[in-house]
Amino acid sequence: MHPESSASDEDAAVALLRLLEEHPEYSQRQLASALGVSLGKTHYLLKALLAKGWVKAQNFQRSDRKLGYLYVLTPTGIRQRLQLTQAFLARKEREYVALRSQISGLRKDLADQGGTPP
Image 1 (cartoon, rainbow, N blue to C red):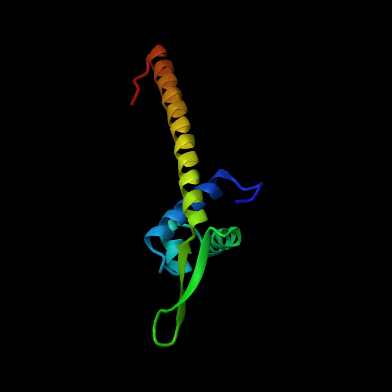
Image 2: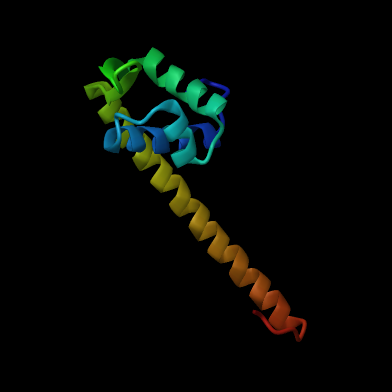
């Protein structure tokens, strides 16, 4: 997202891109609920994706009196979603390996101290 953005922002962007691909008709409120983040955070993420050209907003008639938006991934957005997903998966796999190693070490420490691992 931004140079100073955190991994959690990137994780949220991946989740948002995936969700938009599945549900382009969702409102920002529905997106926020599905992502489990605040409406403000959703607006921030969506605005960043729109500014990068990864997503475009199209008006559509939600009801007789209210316009809504369809949030559609652009070809660039689709490519970026794939790249972000690959990076996300690689990071999570590294975290998984490190966590398994840490758990193994903790279990060994407990066994060496005469404790019982859970």
